[in-house]
Image (cartoon, rainbow, N blue to C red):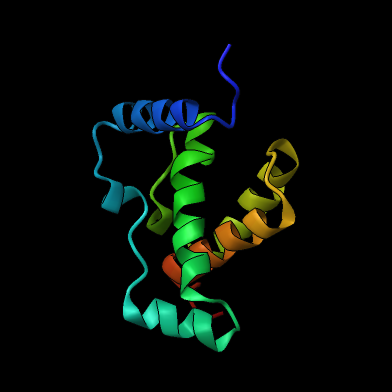
Length: 114
């Protein structure tokens, strides 16, 4: 049996997610943070390396159980209940959870004004 945290299982999960997602490109599913996103995150005290780690977590840990949806397909506010619902089901420690949330906050589109 392969340990769920092994590099092989993460790579296999990622590969399967890409196939399930209809061969969507990685940048379609989880775009790299642009300079404006990095600056917004930095203003909130988030380091750019945390955004990189959050993207990796999204592409590997989330893909382990299901095909990920494009990060940009939901607004920041729409992601919050999704992440809150999924958090208890994951094995992410507090640091990885914060990195994932920071990445999504940086890349997902803003909520429309009320």
